[in-house]
Length: 592
Ligand code: GLC
Image 1: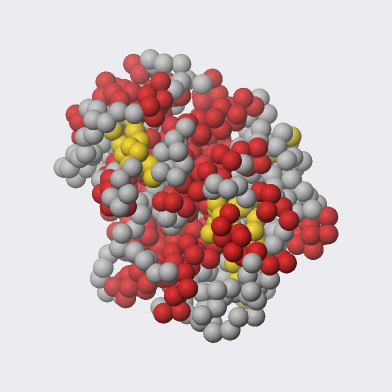
Image 2: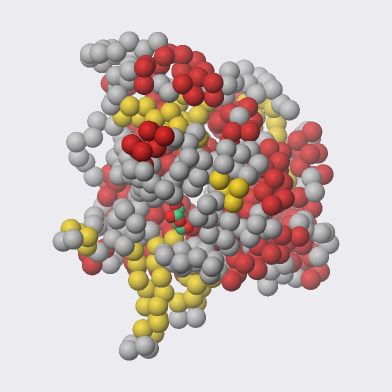
C-alpha cells in the first residue's frame, strides 16, 4: 500500500500508439485485432511524486495530458500524446489482475461482439448482466431511448417501469464504453424535448420552473394516433411530489460524456441542446436571497428521493451542480447570450469550489476545531461563520473519524452541519475535481479506514450512519421504508460501485475497487441484482428491494469496464480546474 500522504498522479500508459490513434471514436470501426490490443495493452500506472513543491504543477501537467485526452475524440490527433515508460507495482498489479484480462470476452457477450475476441474467460455474471441490461431497453417508435428502472414482475411496478434520468446514467456509460452510443444520443434528444414541455407540468395550479428536467418518463402506445407517446414525470406524480434537481445535471454530464466518448460534438452544438443547457443553468444560477453559492434544495430532490433530512444544501446536489457547471462550460458556444452565462458560470464555479472545500470538509483536525468552536461570533472575522453549536456534533462522528482521511459532510447551513457521510456526493466531488487532490486522497483513505462501515459485505453504503429511534421519527416522518440500515437510511446500493470504482481509479487506487467488485460479484447475480441491501454490513437483501434493478446491473458493468480499461474513466471524470484556482485562506472568504 502506498503511503497515504503522498500525492498520486494517475497517468494513462500508452504502449501502442497505433492502437491509441484508432481512439474511441473509431471503436466500432476497429478491426478485432486492434480492439484486442486496446483491451490488453491499455492500462494506467501510478507515479508517486515525492518532490515537494513540484507536486501540484506536476499533477496539473500530467492531468491535463491525461483525462482530457484519453477519452477525447481524435480529430486527427493521437488519442494519447504522452508515452511514459515508468513502471511501478501498481501497473504490475493492474496488468496481472484477473479482471483486466476479461474485457475482450465481456464485449463478446454482447451482440456487438466479434467472436475472434474470445480470448479470455470473463466473470460468469458479466454475460448475465449484459443480457439483463439489454432486456431493460425501452423503445420509442422502434428506437432505443433508455432503460427501465427495474424488471421485477413480482412487485407492483409503481414507477419502476419508467426510464429514470439518474438511473439511466450507468446504463448510458455501459453502452458508451461498449461502443454503442445510439441509445444515449436518443435519450439525450428525448430529454431536451421533454424539458420544453415544462409548461404543461403543473402541480395544483403551480407551474414548475422553466428548464426543469423530468425525474422519469414512460413510453406508451397511443392507439388513436397510432404511435408511441412519452409521458414524463417532473415530480407531479412522484411519491412526495418533489421535483428532481439532479436530472438536469445528469443530462448535462451525460451530454459531455457522449461527446467525449464518440467525438460527436454536433449533438451538443445543436440549438436544442444549447438551449437545454442554458435553461437548466438559468434555473440554478438565478439570483435570489442566497448568501451561499450552494443550491438550496427540498428534501428528496435527488437519488435520496424521500424525506431523509437532506433539505438545505445536500452534498449530492452541490457536487453534481459543480460538475454540470464544468461540463456546460466546455460545451456552451461562446456567442449571443451564452457569453454572459459563461461569465456567471465561471464566477459560480469559483465561489462554489471555495465554499465546499472550506466548509463541507471534515477531517480529524477540522472536527477538533468544530468541537472547540466559539459561538455567537459576529462580523467577518468570525471563525465559526454559521454559528454551529459544538453540542450538536453527534457522538458517532468522534469514533468514526479516523486520524487519516476525511470527507465532505452531508449539509452545511446556518447553525447546522449534517455530519452524515454520503457516498454519491463524495465520489462526484472526486470525479469532478471539486475536491483538492489532498481531499480526494482523504476521501479514499476514509474508505480504506472505515471499510467495514462503508463497504461491509456488500458495496456500498448510500449514507452513514443510519438514523434511529427518535431521530428517525423526527427526520423521516416515521418512514417505514427508511428504517435504520435500510434503503436510503444506511442501506447498501450496488449501483454506487461504478462511482466508487471511478473514484478509485482517478486517485490511483484501483486495487480497492477490485476488492469491492469481488464482494459484489460473490452475491449479486445469485440474489437477482437487487436494488439495495439492508443491515449494518449490507448482508441482507433489502426489505422492499426490487430484483433485476437495472442500475445495479449497469453499475457493475461500468465498474468492470473501467477496471479493465481505465482509459474509460476519461468519459466521466474531469481534471482539476486550473482556471478556477482558489488560493484564499478560510477566514478571508468575505473578501469575494
Ligand atoms: C428509488 C430511488 C431513486 C431511483 C428510483 C428508480 O426511488 O430512491 O434514486 O431513481 O428508485 O430506481
